[in-house]
Image 1: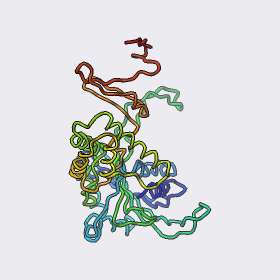
Image 2: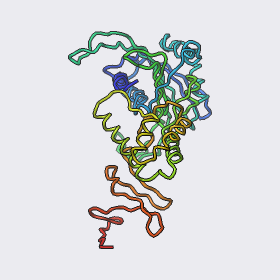
Image 3: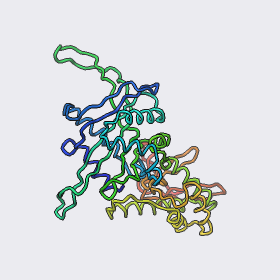
Image 4: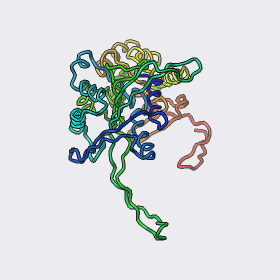
Length: 377
């Protein structure tokens, strides 16, 4: 899916646009047991409850592609024979009316999703009449129907500490508590994918709020596939690949040069308003390293280590590898934060045989807020 397709489905989760008829789900307790099952027509819900429910569901489609949202691809065999895909197709075809299929999906999620505490599984289905695009920009007649499932797995937070308040009806101070409430989704999915403004049964969109763990056990239980590595894992692996392949060439100039080039790619992509997410490959990153000062003889070593870490031909979101908006140098005792567009202020030198980080001082220099006077040295 691309950003334009994602935005089109995300807009469905507004009261004036949504045609979702019902919401099904269950509450999972701390023992990973089903504590309660519900199936409610949205038409019977209070309008205020609907207005609170739809934003929770919409959060499952919020984030950046390649960062919080990941395309999962299925093989022809998985589509025709995979238990997970057959189960989801039963639910999609029956409008969440197959109780046995619902129970099976709940069991797969509760036994695979590792979460301490209670959480809610929310499952909805919608038939979206996809309108044609017109020259005027206004929706035209329906050209197809996209029938999809959206699943959101949301922690249920315990009641907060009592809060001091005033009961107007009694003219008395009171301690008020709130009941446990549904929090933002931790994981979820859209099935099938919406690509080319139609259903793609060979894919799904997976959401994961955490950047540290992608909960691969969840996607394995539901779809029989693993998600890409988490953002944290991608970043750590890329840092190791660069350091090990560049060797002595892994200097400040090389790493900062790559970061600047990645920042340039991101900005150009934004300026072009390309709906497709931006991805980079091993050859692109190799060329960026060499252009920044790495000896070209290390190029093939970089590609080899990259393929070992991520898989040959793997495309990655560049912002997951080096943050284009952050420039931070650290030692065991010092952390230096620099404006991302002023990397030129930093140099690394060896002074009297000691490796040093040299910062050119421009403008006022303060220490804990106190203005310093830096004279000739």
